[in-house]
Length: 103
Image (tube, rainbow, N blue to C red; front, side):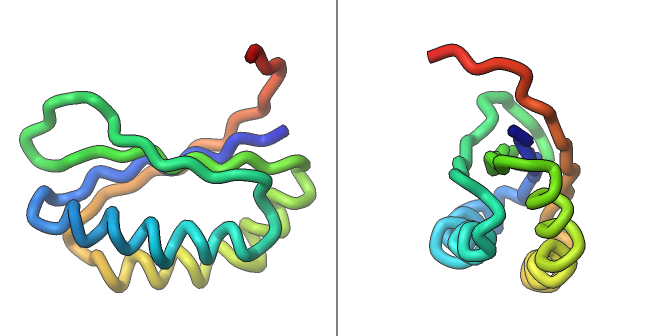
């Protein structure tokens, strides 16, 4: 399993609009690629002067599907996000290999 995490710091003046757009547009579009099993969005609980930070996590069943997403879907989805919120966010992405789950 691959966990794809996108950490995004959003300008407070755009945070509500961004969160609404993520819930209604972006995350559903990512999930519609059929590359991920599940998606989650969380607010990072930290006080930051220049933004509100969120973590968006997607669970992928294989490296092959993750590569498909990265090559075929991510460029357009990231471009759409960047154009809509240009100048109001900073993001970084992390890929993690899940080695064990505990429930």
